[in-house]
Amino acid sequence: MSKSMKSALLLLGPLLAFLMLAYVFPFLGILRWSFTLPELGLGNYSDALTDPLVLSVFWRTLRVCVIVTVVSVASAYVITLLWVRGGPVQRLVMELCILIPFWISVLTRAFGWLALLSNRGLINTWLQGIGLTSDPLTMVRNEFGVVVGMAHFLIPFAVFPLASAMRNLDERVLLAARGMGAGRQRVFWTVFLPMTAPGILGAALIVFVFALGFFVTPAILGGGRSVMVAELVYLRIFQSPNWGLGAAISVILMIGVAFLMGALMKAVRPGEKS
Amino acid sequence: MKPTRPGLVAVVLAALVAVFLLMPLLAVIPVSFTPKRFLSVPEDVWSLRHYQSLIDEPEWARAAGLSVLIGLASAALATALAFLFSLGIWMLRPRYAGALMGLALLPMVAPPVVSALTLYFFLITLGQVNDFVAYDSVPGVILAHMVMISPFAVVLITVSLAQIDRRIDLAARVMGAGLFTRIFRVILPNIKFGVLTAFLLTFVLSWEEIGVTIFITSVDVATLPRLMWMGLRDNIDPAIAAVSVVLIVIVTAVILTRTAVQVARSRRGEG
Image (cartoon, rainbow over all chains, first blue to last red; front, side, top):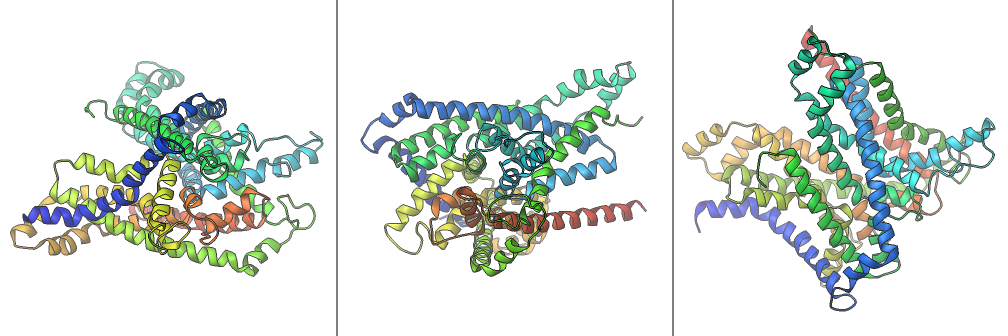
């Protein structure tokens, strides 16, 4: 064996072997489940694509993910704007508002929303205390709670691509627009916003892809009522077992995400062929 | 001419988003002092009973200890594997580097639930031939966490490798250094900060991992997030609020300290 072959095996081998064993082969096993349980054939896929319950979960997932993406990217845009282009104090405050939630676990954050939104939570206690409502408003165990919780989780992830787009922007173009008499509003809408469009697209794709496979927040804030795809997989594996169907839904999800990742690569590096 | 600062509308909107981001973290604090046994806001009496129960009930300390153990083991192993792999890509520049990198990063980009199901399959299959590494076992959780966190270590170490000058490795090689010397005496000292960061990040990721852990454990292995998850699903246990406050205080303290150090440093740099 040549020397470079030996060092390749030594360096690249361990991680690749580990991932093949613990990830790639088991995924092939899932693929096999989807075609063979309970019987050989495409039954699980035709079930997944025709069963009204599964379809309604797919539609709900898409709808929630689109809303979450729009809310997260728009919110992230304004805080990134201040973080990148604000004065020193604004920068510091925004940085803390982005970093602290980012490092706090998803469970704690979902619980925080329960503490705020549930029937005996802060908002309902306060509303009833001042006599504005007599019955608690239902804000969790429905799609509203899921959207709020997911947007809260995903905003920091949208900040990073937006920040890099805003940092790489050529300041002179903005100065030229100002110099030629465009007002602040006009500079923002016709120059700044279009120039950060690749960052917006990147952020939207990242948030959307993350949101699609999201399990914990919807399960806690949806309370089993507004089930999304990831939770459906869990239910089909552990609660009303239909392993073949659960596997087929996972494979469909994986394919969808692969397409979106391909789009993301193109959006980030439009010049290169993938 | 100075760059334009964001206008009033942007400041107001950003302040609203900032409130949105911090609100749930602050909301946990009053709830943790409720005297009742269910999620509620304390009215007249504020109680420390839920903090007391964190100390009295041994399962919380046991879960935190287990999470630290699993975090240290999986972060150390994942960082070591990622270190060798990233070095291999950097030093050897193999022909299919892009594809190999894609494979290494796969668990990071795949939907978490697909990874969770895949690792569940992996562990029940292994469990059929041995009892040590199996579903609902500590070694099983360590392996599963390694899969999930190693891509992040690969990214961080690759980024810090990209910043070193290849000529120092070339010089070492020309002067007859073997692979071992080149790695541990020439390259590692230059990227030790990146490797340390990778270890810390992967530790944190394992410490708070829940999506995969739900699929691969049932009753025997209760990490801290797993225990919190059980307390959140059925009847919401206010002890979760007390745990959350502790976790939020730790994270906030670390980030504020780091920021204060940075601010002090930049002041000194200007002065």
